[in-house]
Length: 145
Image (cartoon, rainbow, N blue to C red):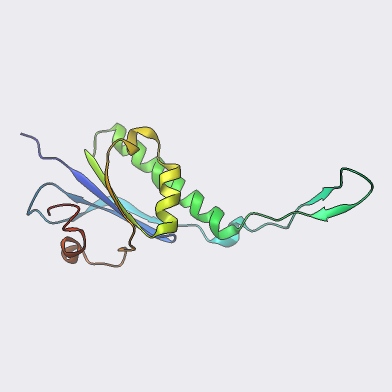
């Protein structure tokens, strides 16, 4: 019988990595080529726009999008696209999302249905810096590793 492959996405707004578990007591191992770095937020900064008044010759500045929020959205979309390609190939059966609240929200918004259908659990914690051997201590209730 083929083991159930569970991927765990560990993400924050700056970096992400995917680790894998193949069953109870098996621990975690990194997935090759599944480390991501966010683009600098400065790439998304722009000069505020100006709009014309509906009446008269007045003009006013418009609030621009927060470059940090935009960078997080783009980063989440990049990860979601990669996960969709991997899901289509059958690389994993289940997915656990582990990210800080802001990134977790961005990921939820970005994940396409084929990936959302594989989400086993969500954990609102930033565990990106936790060592592989320490992950079972943090995710024991979510996944028997």
